Image 1 (cartoon, rainbow, N blue to C red):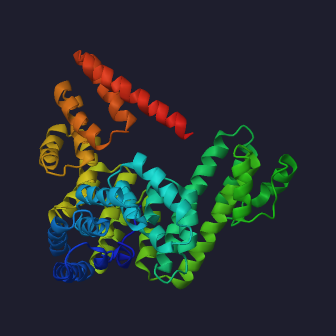
Image 2: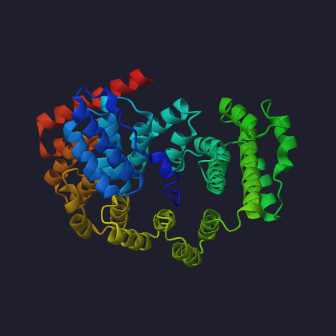
Image 3: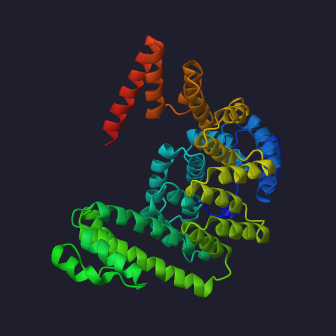
Length: 449
């Protein structure tokens, strides 16, 4: 579930352009600096359309400024124009590595569901930016989006009590992270040959409404040399990472995640009872109990009382998606598009819903304007290719996939689909090209291991 607000809009402030470094006459330099400062002021007061126009004009005179390209990307991102924003950040990074541009690019990759690209970027950010909480905050929600709950736990523990990040939001997202982690460890435990007695201990605690599921700790101590009943969460995590198949450690991680959830819920109930983030969490809990109408009503109430929180409608749509209520999700994202037609993320989710509902003629009509844009998004070409696949139009499918291939040349799935289609239509040159590309990616993956 994405965060309800663009947390830390202040974190997305424009990068100051270093006018003194420009190799231009003093008069021109001064004029440029004044224009750049005006553009920065426009961006920071959130007049994003005017800021976009200003930065495009500035880039005509200074096309090799990574700062200007980053600021243009920030304006485009705020307008919901994900694909041109991605291109702007990528252009900035080709000129020079800027951690801010890299984090914003990772965030947009996550938004448009380019998860293969986002995943290594998020790992790099977490590794390189351990002390830069503001950059971590930009991409924080992505770790849950990519179903990386342990990394998400690390991220939100860092963000708790940080003055630039809402503490109530950090704790709510931490609860979500522990919930996802608990579900992961339970799945692993259920698949473990020795997991049965531990699962029974957890189930007994749930059935009796007991706060403690530690009844099998004594068994775990006898069964595993790596188990220690006195471990806190991080100590147990370190032990589990060294012995990931040990059922006693899987059990301990499940229990500790549950205890951390209870601890944070109690804290929020005591201190953040009126927090909109906590209200959203309660709505999620109601939805997870399959009371969707009640949960939707809670979301609608939040939308009425907190209209300034732009992520609420998106969160409502995602709630329906998580419950596979595709028609209801479609209605929510279409409502978002009616108010914000450039919101590419909402368009992406609309397309996803239409695919799930198998409404292919309607999906084709929806996608054609998106693929005809000058900066057409990758997801639109891939989804339109799915339409043509369903309609048994291999030529049109190949056309869309080749466009997608240019945008994402290292995506193995695109090359594999093209290889299959080229073989089907008898395109020997295309078949050879795709086989060569797949071999290249195989060698590249082997070298990176």
